[in-house]
Amino acid sequence: MGYHFGSKADLLVAAFEQLCDGYREMLGMLSEEPTADPVEAASKLDEALRKSFVWPARFRERQYAYFGFWAMARTDAKLRMVNRRVYDEVAAYLGMLLGLIARARGR
Image 1 (cartoon, rainbow, N blue to C red):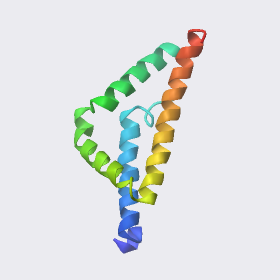
Image 2: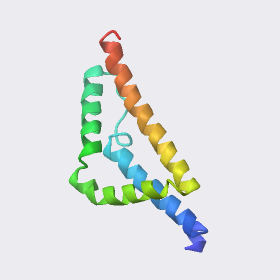
Image 3: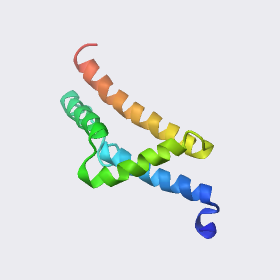
Image 4: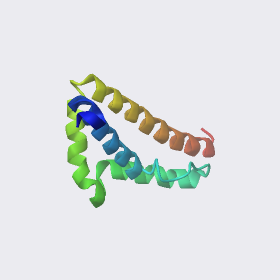
């Protein structure tokens, strides 16, 4: 472990980051090109919001690990930084989709 990660804390951070990559993938953030089409943006937003509440089967086991790391992030500064970065990335992605939809509707 020390050879690859340096410490248990660094191992936890790497595991949380990998888990967060799966979360972003589940929301469609990693596997798809950004869209400029408001109809497609609305569909992606709907799908991302639905998946954030009911995780697809292939991600369901990861859900419990994600919430475990999320709980640990409350007391661990390194995990909190990863959690904040992912939260900001997800918020920016969803905000971008909302912005496309709003502009298409003249708002």
